[in-house]
Length: 540
Ligand code: PEP
Ligand code: MG
Image (cartoon, rainbow, N blue to C red):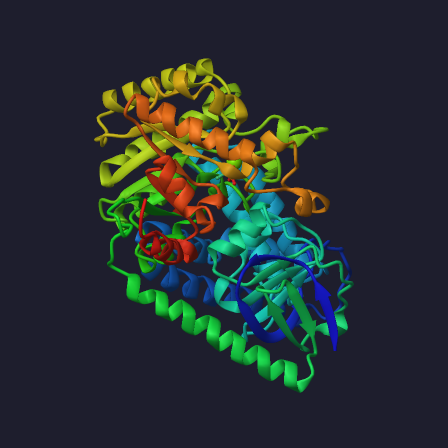
């Protein structure tokens, strides 16, 4: 038995087999083959297996996110039947090239062909060619798509996980995350929380492949990971896990109940999402709306910009599924820990203080306008609000609103129907909080991002695991800025919410209600917990 202490990200217990995750950076070598028929057979089987995977993905997406999103898997399946593409692979193998390299050659040849075309739609197909080819190569190499080789869900151990890796994971195959490094305020931790998975970061252990398949326990209440627990400990942990599940089930009774205190004060409890699929959890948790859709996750884990139509399909699906409930879409907050290669961002000394979020959007308006067009087009299908991240000045908001007006004007001329869209900003820099009296006159709402507000106010890098213990999330300076923002917002009659992780901290629920916070937006897994905390407040 081995025990490791880490920083807990979600209070829960998981018991199961351990799997040590490896980064999926594989390199394909060209090798000479002699058994041509055998190699042709490998290709044929891999392509058939890829088509079977795509059919399954299509069926799954159809029920979870609707036909618009499912369609891409059908298109990919059809691309794998394209005679020209298959011929290039076949010819390369007949010339003595190994299957993996032959598929990669076809990928390069067709990606270049598509990229050189004038038509934007055809250009974008280069990504699809890469996607289908990589799928076939993974199958040939025996690498599972999500990095988890077993059907049985596992406790996933990793050195660290990037947000891009985490978004690709299949929630149903994971019982818990444990990482050697990482901080509990990182986006990876936030994603684990949104998946309602017990998770520990910064465990300082040295995992090795011989851990694979061994039994492990993640105790998110005590921040502990135990490998091969002794029988009495295992038995106790199974009981604790059952208790945790029972406690969650008990919260179910609060579904359909109001978020109202014993003395009649009300607050909206919304949910935070990063992916279209997360809407299921939002509806399941009975949240009143979506208070933060981290739209940048639509840009992660892929090789080129999502097109306007792709984004439109995502926003439309979320808005429709929410059936008229408010959905606050935050525009692109890329940069810092959320890195995307195709943005070609320069390395920076201090990325958290660098070229990110609204700064990129104002500097590269073509990216911003594509996103705004997609959101406004989708706004006809539900109740959309838009908020802008990392604002530090009134000028930024004015410039942003000019771009919004331009986009709306263009869409009107093009004849697109649009809904009424509230415009708000995230208050996540001390500058925005201190200027909240001025900023409030420019927008329809404020949403306070306590994760960044804490990092910038206390000068504590939220990614730095060494600073976790010294970082006081209840620091009076942060609470003062929150209070000031709420007051300034209310002075001009706009609503003020909190969408950072602190919104789910039930030790502060009463404080936030006393300040007059109108909305708390938390991970779907925390909605009922916060509702309980609100309902447990008896007097003012
Ligand atoms: C925040 O900073 O509090 C926030 C909600 O945004 P993110 O965590 O995505 O930076
Ligand atoms: Mg932020």
